[in-house]
Amino acid sequence: MSMTAEDIMTLELLQLAQYFIKLEKKAEMSIPETFRNGTIFVTGCTGFMGKVLTEKLLRSCDVKNIAVLVRGKNGLDASQRAGDIFKQSLFDRLRSEKPEFMTKIKIIDGNLEEQSLKISTDNHDWLIKNVNFVFHCAATVKFNEPLKVATRINIQGTENVVTLATNIINLKGFVYVSSAYSHYPRNEIKEELYPLSITAKELKQLIILDGKVDRLLVDWPNTYTLSKAITENMILTNENQLPISIFRPSIIGCTTSEPEPYWLDNLQGLSAVVTSIIVGFLRSLPMSMNKKTDIVPVDYTVNALISVMWDTVNRYQNSNERNKQPKIYNFVSSVDKPIYWGKFFDYIYEIYYQVPPLNTMWYICCVFSDNRWIVAIMGFLLHKIPAALLDLSLLICGKNPKMLKMYAKREKMTVLFKPFTTVEWKFDNSNTRELWTLLSQDDHKTFWFSFEQFDWKSYVQGFVFGIRKHILKEDLNNVTKALSKNKKLFWLHQLCICFVIYIALHVCWLFVELLM
Image (cartoon, rainbow, N blue to C red; front, side, top):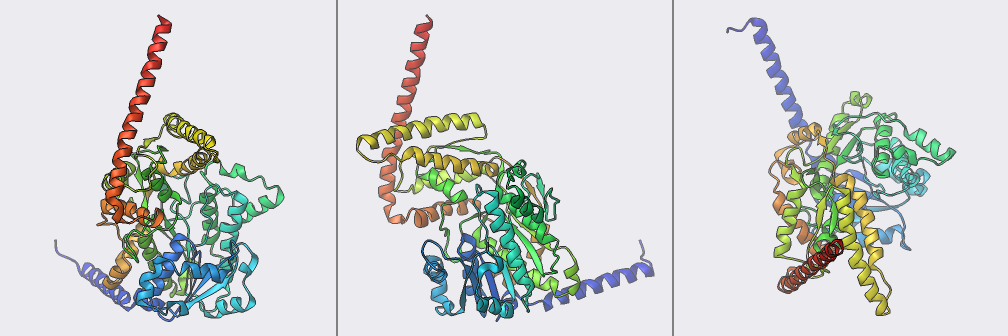
């Protein structure tokens, strides 16, 4: 079919437009160039992701300063807490490559919950005059936090940071870290704003009036997800016209490679569950093995977060963007490289058999089910009865009983984790995928976050190595000894199973005799 003159003109205009788009992309600065000689303000630097973010920015970008908001805690002031953090092994590579990195860190003593962040006048003025980028990562991640507290930290705290940001003279970008599960009640979560039945202002007013806010949790599994959703809606109005974006990561796991392979430093969420299983402590868990999980490594998460800031800065260079709704980025793995809970734990068991921890209390044995009755019965048989027997033996030896208390605490943890292990969501990550295509080849190498070729088996098994090293404080020199202990625990485990079966059959036989 021959083309008309109008068709040819349209095609030429389209090609010309594509040419100018390519020129515009080439004109955009790389990620390191965007941050060069810039000053960054980071909240939540004492948290898991905040530490990795601070390390990555210092190592991969030639920044002028990074100001970190730190609150005094447990008898330590802000400087002491920050000093302890930067001594951790996470910063060993940075210490080697850039030994002067501490000269670029400015510690801001403050409190997220207090008005004006409770920072000194001098620090406030310094932030206003010098900051160019704000990463707001701080939040309470406790699922069972009272809603009043979650409101004060997650909602009011964010409002306090936003208020500070509105006064910053040379602000180029602001990224708020939310959660992929912020709109938990929805089966499909897209990168868009969802209406809520209550606003941040209304919630705070309700707390002041009567404090009876628990009824708001009817459709929400915890105060964390609800407070994140309300905070998002507060930000998305963008009344202050900030160059702002929202970043939503899913369940965050250990690193893949940077700055150290399989690094993690806390017993929270997923790491707490996996650790409890491989040491033989957790033997019953609510879990839908046929449901997809959504885990993202913390170094991938940080790379994506930094890239979101880069994209935010580029978008808001055009002043027209300030009148638009802030952009949302879902950072998830299930779209490009899904993995099911069943396969996840297959990999955990596989590596366990090769390198079990030495500090185990029992052979690995966990019943996974999404049936609450099976979980409850197995919990009683495999947790409470053994714990009661151990506590009895401790009492006989004149020691304080502790096992029942430990299992009660762990069962509360599994109940809080259940909404994320028995439910599956359909996520959209179009904005995040588009962001990946905008990065240059050099930025791809330095700030990799694509899941297209991700190796789950290697990562999950590395997760176990990370737990052995950083949580259980074990190295691979003890593998022979650990295997020997594990073999003994295996036979003891089998003996216990035989004993239980014998008791069960004996009870059944007695019951039959009574009936006869």
